[in-house]
Length: 496
Image (cartoon, rainbow, N blue to C red; front, side, top):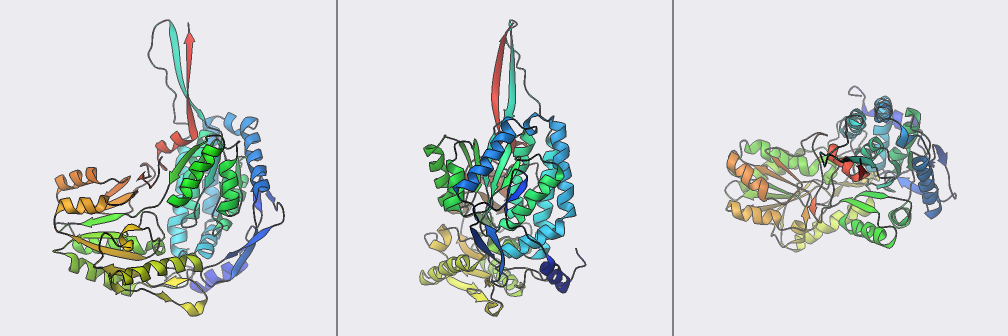
């Protein structure tokens, strides 16, 4: 992949065959015949007309998953056998890596280098990790009275509905699918209507890997129709969602209005990134802050969109980030030289521009960017944007923008920094830069966030859990802890 040129990627894109039907019970299903266009944000062109799921298609997918769970082989396979199939799936994802990376890049605007090297690496590693973990889990036999035997078994929860967004379409899907399958569950995946193509490819590849029919089903459709039908379906036992806090509330209501299914939510964020004057390397801190907010076009729930920097070093750090924003190459996602691609679509670009306009109206100072670029391409491109002079009460500092827009706030002491960091309804992630070990421990404990990075940002691997506090959600993806979402504990007490 590293040797491919822009022209070669363009040639591969023209030859790419994309799936357009749902994947239900191991085969492609057109359903009712309704369809919707998937538009590429790189040039505004329609990539494909994809089958549009309504309640009928969702019911077919859930019914297939129900049959596969109740009477199919998957939950009854040995964990080692399930693990071998997940490892085969990881191998096939590696084999189809270029095709999947192209689909991701075309449908949501991510640079092809990031799609191939980061998105696909994460998805492949996730299936491989849970494939290797599948037969390492053990049940319990607590020591109890001599006249009884107690067994505590962890059993698959049943049919899992997984609803994932467009910003990391394969990574976030794999974080939910892989542990659910390793546990012995069956899955119905509903990707975002902005990025269904890579998910539909994943469903077909999973069947090729040996997943029995009905174990992984993929339906394409929008949230208010297909997502609602999945959330309300009485045969869905667990619903796992990544997306906005507003939509997460809907899924909780759907559960209350149906069968009280368990709902696991990974929601929005407004993550603080605190830079203290004793940061071990201010240049690295500034460069990492710039990378964190501009990577993936800023379309990340963990993006460090609030930079909290000590007033004594604020201008030095801000100038370095502004300089990086000016150097960043925004361009065609299929060009390997591109560092920041297209926003996912015109409507989302419009929302981000609205936030920028409000920031100007509220008196924040625009230091870089602030408008769209490459309009002649037909695509949805935005210049990397930096504001300073941001007040904590401004919309820029309170609301998730989900774009490459950085708000710089200053503080004068550590207590003020912690107060500012926690002054949000969200609690997904945070960053801290300091050379003092005691400060690192104390502040990390004080920050109300599911993940705290110290002297780095967006680091980690599959051994550690990921998820939020407060209105950033509940439950955890990644690590062995993710299996808690897809299993039930059963106690068996045998009187001897």
